[in-house]
Length: 162
Image (tube, rainbow, N blue to C red; front, side, top):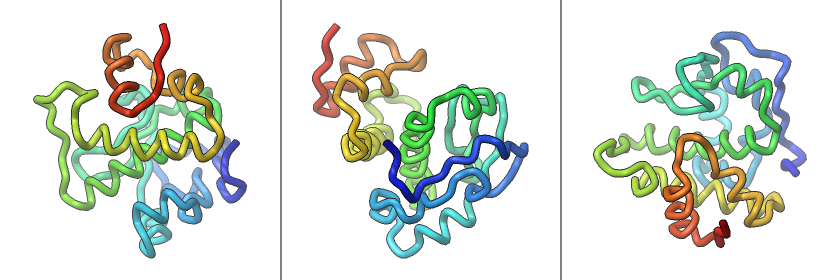
């Protein structure tokens, strides 16, 4: 269940828009306030979103830190998955603003910036009531192998059963 102040508007998919066109109330969520402090509202208002098929789900642009979202994923995914993906990507937005860049030499599930984003997202998943099995389902995607999923779950302190 999403926090009551959060609204995700799936009916307004312009190719490019501001974050608050589709995502409302995120600046009021405790985890986002924890990330950005008093600047949470300013960051939300200034963040640009681009709907593009150049990404599978959602990611932050390495060029300028704006949010890239696959329009099909956005329209088809359930709200909880989108919510958690936004939280995850907002961690990367913060990292981008701090000048941190991902190390593509390191395996994806071992990258410190990814682990930080996953830790914060998993904590939020627990806060909104997801079970460990539901969290594993959330983490499981074609972007990680079964072995990587097991490794990631272990790193995040989540029980993983085959």
